[in-house]
Image (tube, rainbow, N blue to C red):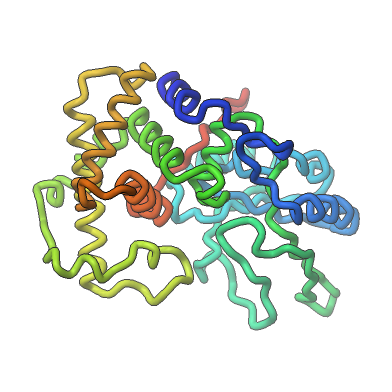
Length: 325
């Protein structure tokens, strides 16, 4: 992972994820008040359901609240399990079990994961800040059971830049805070270091050979519609367009990696590879060569495909090694 660390430091410079006015300020004012309110309300709670992102089971934990949560009966709900690698997810469940911590992977948009209640429900969203106040809901009468829905809150400072980038890549922080190009560069560094494009070659041999869809249809579908609760699901032609776009992206990254004769563990080599990949992706996505914002458009499309799970399921955090493992 030396290559990733080098590229991150070189590309991001002195960027800091701090609340003290560093180069990046990502701690909205309401979150400070919400954090204080959560600490106070925890005294009233008998049990806590801590929602984390399945793709970043550790990075998405609010470290400032962990000391207050450790004394409570707690269930860690790893949301968005449909976007996480199932081959690794069971290792995370085993890890939490070895820590004597209850953990369950869920998909909040799946009826099989969460039973739909016919009652008033809290408003939710992919980014922290949709819920800005603590709201209470009575869900049972005998005995009386109340649920306190708290805002999703970030911490005022992040231990390291890569943790912040994982949060940004998963969509837990607004792209404008870090910058789409920075996040996309980090994504490419992760894919290259893990050798992911080589796995795509084995999984998509048939489509890698080149199945094209009618190009005149392509402009009609907006990739932003892949985001949850945006619009109606894509129709058949849109699905074919998305599949072909994904194939072109995967083919472009596979080709650049297979022709790469450097070392992804070397930051300079990895940086050079990423530059070549941005150009290959621009061609694959058919973004005009002279477009002033071509690199930004490439970044936005690549991030949308990743976050929608079109590039495959991923878990960005590494499972810690424990004595029981």
